[in-house]
Every structure is written in structure tokens, then in C-alpha cells.
Amino acid sequence: MARIRAIHPRFPRSASMCRVSRDARLLFIQLWLVADDAGRLHLNLSVLTEELYPCDDDAAALLPSWLDELEREGCVERYSVEGRDYLRIVKWRKHQAIDRPTPSLLPGAPREAREPREESVRSHKARAFPADPREDAEKEKGGETVVLTEELVLRRLDRLYHAAGKNGSYPAALRSTELLGKKLNMWGGRKEKPNKIGHWKNDTGVERSRSPGELLGLPDTAD
Image (cartoon, rainbow, N blue to C red; front, side, top):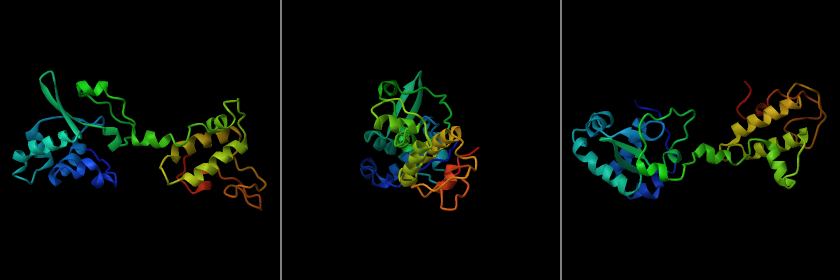
């Protein structure tokens, strides 16, 4: 079954794609559409030709050579398990960040189990911010026990504000910060005096929003 996939803007400039033919590049992208959420698919050339090149009569003869190009560059790997042929996209999770991936029903390649576990683009970006803002403070204080305070949460929000949109990691971090703020009743509409972080309070003592995302102009994480 075909799936909606994403293409990174730098894909055309990758070294491997510059070393293969234009047809092989197109094939590589189209393979993503029929691969499962683990980057694996049944390798049946006649089925692939019909699915990916329904309008091209010459594709059946050329498809094997395009696959050869991609395999030479380490983009794909062909393998067999119990007499059946499969193909996997190498470094799949670096190409696709998938929310709630469906577990694969296809066997992995023998060498796949020996490779370091791939880290998704989303997971890599999320490391920019710890899930709990207290982790930041623990680093600052040398691992000492840190008490959760409004100042700690607001400092975290200030960091999120300045980083928003730069690496795409803020939604999960924002949500965790929001939950910690709720423990301190920070988003309940209490009147507050102004502080040095002008994003959340003003001179009139306006009510705080129920969501820090609204305060930062970021997607709302509530509910």
C-alpha cells in the first residue's frame, strides 16, 4: 500500500544522489512510497514496475540497473529470507520521521540486526531540549537536587521561544514544560506582576494564558 512520505530539501544535493542517474534518484524516492514504516518491502520487480511506472513501457527492463546503482551507493539493500526476496531502505529513519509507526510484518535483513540502531530525525532534534526542564537546572548545578519553581519553568519557556522554528524540536519540550507549569498552577488565569520575561506578563497584570504555547505564538499543546 502506498504511503505519504516526506523529502528533505537537501536530498538533491546528497553525495550519493549526485553519483547515481536521474532515473535511479526517482526510483529511490518512489521506493519510499511502497516501503513499510520500517523501510522494508517485498522485492517483486513486476509488481514494483506496475506500481511505480504504470506509464513507462521500458521501466521493467531498466529497473534492475537502477537498483544496482542504488545498492552500490548503500542506499538500498536486497536480501532473501526463507526463499523470498526483500529490499530495505538503508538508514531509513534518517530519511523519514514517522509518528506512531506500524510495526513491520517483514523480516529484517541479516546485517540489519548488527548495525547500530538508527536514530530518527525527530528523535535527534528532540535531544536539543531535555523532556524535563529540571534536567537543565541539574546540569547547571552539578547534578544537585533541584526544586521545581515558576522561575525554572519560565526560564525554560524563554529558551523554547528563542529556539522555536530553528530545529523543529519544541512541541514535545513545550508540552512537558506546560505540564510542569500546571503542577505549579501557572496556567490557571492568576493575576501576576510583570517580570523580566515580557512574553508572559505585562504592566497591567493581564491574566496568564492557559497554554504557554499561546504565549509564545507556537502551536497549542493543550488537550
